[in-house]
Length: 258
Image (cartoon, rainbow, N blue to C red; front, side, top):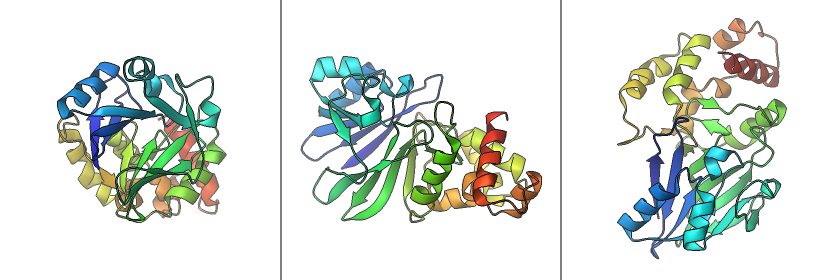
């Protein structure tokens, strides 16, 4: 199994992912552009088995229709995506395991908050989590907005399903927002040395060549939404005695207007 992270150069800085399997088939996650996906499939001589959509927003599904028409592939998504996700043919449920290559699987995570039809996908190798496709739930150094969703649900999703992941799990989000999110981190936690160190790397990186990939351990160091107990963040929010959830909600509101 190989994971190809494709920066689409779209106005929303989307990522599309192609999972290449040993039997020369492939799964595509959140196809921004069908022609772009087809070019990659042809270059690698792969047949498209299925599309996986993390959620129903247009920038994550707009390649569906053309790819289904050309390849006759299935489309897998959340049950709440019915009527919203083009070509939806398989409803995925929390905890479901999708077999990839021998010893490799995707575990389906039901992750409401950004929308109520959002799924994330944990990559397992020999039963051990090694990466996670996070759509618009978790970004590098940030989390998704809740317009059309619910911030309380997002807090629960992040705190219960992502804070507990091992440090070495790689994070593959739906957009390249790392640079801007690091700037937000430094706006609420100016003394964060890891954010200070990563920001020039993010500014210099070319995502079309080699996108920067963080891991959960990195997120613990510079993602404000993983640092809810940090004194500098709490002081800036006038929330020294607040619960973690209250801090999260205030942070998300601040980020919405930042």
